[in-house]
Amino acid sequence: MENNKIKSDFFLGGLYSPSTFTFHNLILWTWNPIKEIKKPTKVVSGTEPHMLVLTENNTLELYHSKKGKKIFNIENERIMDIISGAHTYLILTSTGKVFSLANGSKHPNHKKVPTKDWTKNTMDKIEPVPYFTKKNLFVKQIAMGYCTNYYLCSNGELYGSGFGSNGRLGLDLLSGSPQLPVLIEKNVESVYSGAHGLTFFYVTSANELFGSGKHTNRILGINVDVIRNIPSKMRAIGFEPREITNLKTGQIHSVLITNKGKIFSCGDRVSNGHGTTNTVFTELAEFKNKFVVEMASGEYQTLALTKDGEFYAWGFKVPPTNESNSWERPTKIKLPNLTSTSPTNIKFWCGSTVNFIFNCNVSALYQDFRIFFNSKKFTDLVLGSSSNETKCHRCLVKLRTNNTEIEKIKELFIQKNEEEINNFLGWVYCDQVSNSQSLRKIFISLNLSYPPENNLKQDLLKLYKDEDSKDFSILVQDEDEDEDEDEDEDNFEELPVHKFILLVRSGLFSEMFGNIDQNSKSVKDFSGKTLESIEILIKYFYTEKIEFTADDDPEFIAEELADAIEYYQLNKNSNLKEELLKTELQN
Image 1 (cartoon, helix red, strand yellow):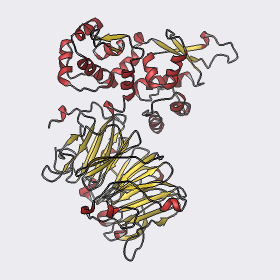
Image 2 (tube, rainbow, N blue to C red):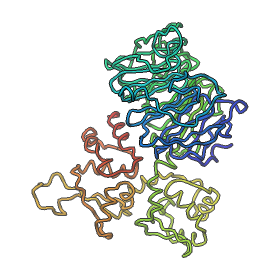
Image 3 (tube, helix red, strand yellow):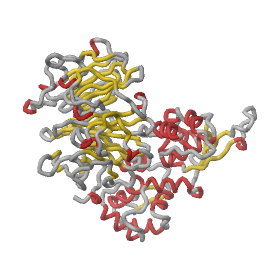
Image 4 (cartoon, rainbow, N blue to C red):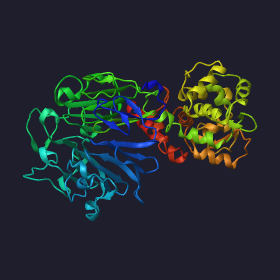
C-alpha cells in the first residue's frame, strides 16, 4: 500500500511484522487507515487485539478482532477519560465515578484479580466500580499499568488494586494482590503509569515526585537492579514535579514532558531512544531547542510533536513505519495524507503495542465549515444545471482555485453531475476528497496543477488578508473615545470580515444575523473587549491560531479572551483555550 494514495482520517501504526499480528483485517507494518473511526476524542489499547474509542458524542466504541465492533453508552454520565492496561479498560466520568470494560476473569470490580486467561474473554458490558461511591469518594484521575489500576481521589488519597508484584502498587505485600482498592498514599496531586508499565509515579502536594515498581533497567531512574516495594523519592533535575503534564511508563523506560515544552527520559538505553542508559530523568538532546507540545508512549515506543509541527518517533524494534528495524534516536517522520502536522491538525496516542494517528485536518478542524457548506446560508454562487444546482460561496471557490474566473467554473460544472460537484466542493470547504480521479479532471479543465498546491488552512489565511472580498464589518467601540458621548458611528472602529466566517465560527454573531436586516453591512460588538483583542480573535476565526504583534500585551489579551468560547459561542471543537495557554507559555 502506498501511503500517498491513502485517503482517510484515522491511521493505525503497527509495531509487528506482517506475519505476526493483524488488527481489524489490517496488517500492522505501516500506517494503515481505519475508515470506520470518525472524530475520536481519545483512543486506547492494551496488549490484546482490541481497542476502545471515545467519540465526540460521548459514546464508547470497542473494536475487537474476534467480536467486531460494539457501541456502549453510560446513561446519565459524561465521560471525561478512558485508559487501558494490558487487558482492561477504565472509564472516568464527570461525577467522579469509575467504570470498566474487561474480560470476565479480569474485571477490576475485583472479585477476581486480572489474569492472562484470554480464553474467558467477554467484554460484553460496562460495569461500575462501586468501591469509591460507597465510601463517598470522588475520583478525579485514573491511571493503569500492566494489570494494575490507580485511582486518585479529590481529597488527595491515592488507591491501587491488581497485581502488586515487583512493587507495582507501592505496597510491601508479603503475598497475593489486593482485589479491592487499597490506600497507597495521601496528599497526592497527580498519578501516572502506562498501558504496559511496570512502574508508576505520583506528585505530592509538597511538589515531590515519587515512583515505585520494577527498578531493573533504571526504569525508575534509580541506579540499582533490585526491586523496591515502597515508593522512592525521585531526583527531578531540570524540572519541577508540578511542571509535568504527561508521564508514561513502558516495559523498561519512562518518559515525561513539562509545561515548558521539555522532554525527559530514563531507563535502559535500548528503549529510551537516545543511546545511553539514564539513571535519572534526563532531557533528550534532540529536543533541547524545541518546544514539545504532546507526547505518547507505549511498551517500547514513544511519539512526540513539537509546536513547529515536527513529528518524532523512537523506540526499540518497534518502528512506527516500515523504514527501519530499530530507531535508537528520536527520528523525524512524515505521516500519510497530512499536509500539516501542527498541533491543531493531528491527535495521537500510543497503545501498549500500537500507535494511533487522527487527522483533524479532514474531520474535526474544519467540521464547522462542513456544517456550513451543508446549510447553504449566505451563498452567492450556484454550480450545476437547474436539475442539480448546488449553492456555495463565490469568494472561497475563487480563492481555492487560484482566482480562476467564476464564469469559467460555472460553465465547466453545467456538464457535471451532483456527485462530481459535491466532490469538488468537499475539497473547497473541507480538504476532503471522495473521488481523486474526478477532482483531477476538474483541475486539468481549469488549468490547475494536481494535487492542489495549497491546503484549506493556507487558503483561509489568504482569505483573511483579502480585504477586497470582505463583505461585512464588526464595529468595536474606540476605547480612546469618551464613554459618556452619545453612541455614534464615528466612535466605532470598523474591522472588516467575511460574513460567512462569522456565521460558522460564532453562534453569537449567527444569532445577530437573525435579528438584523439581511442586507446590513455591519454589527456592533458590545463585549467590552479592546480593539486589539477583537482583531486577534477575528484572525483566529480564519486560522485557528492566536498570534501577537510586537505591540500586543499577551498576558492582557489572554485575560480578555479567556471567556471568548462561552461569550461568542464558539464551536465545541474550538482550540482557543489551548492556543491561549500555548502563547502564554511561549511569552
